[in-house]
Length: 122
Image 1 (tube, rainbow, N blue to C red):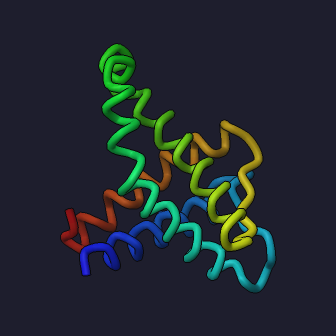
Image 2 (image 1 turned 180 degrees about the vertical axis):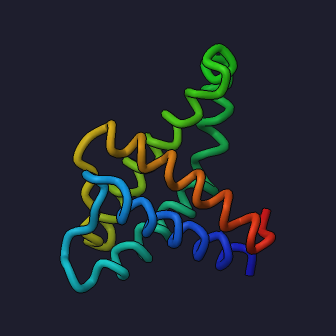
């Protein structure tokens, strides 16, 4: 049940990022919600599997930059999730530039924190 809540929160955050951030968008028109759901599923799985390893490996740089490098790790995970979602499911997710992915990672982090506080998830 906890994973389903995490997936739903991530889907809401990704939908907000697609709506707000230019250059972070879905391709396919009518099936945008399917692409967001699939991308959110892949992003949730990547966050569970790869994110802790990258956080530990990047800990010295994160400490030196006072936590700002953590956003770069989130941005790289967005690229990995988009690559996997497009490759495995043909979800049609497009990230135009590193800047748009960086802003999208900030939006996703903020919206996820807000929705998690409302839902009461960890």
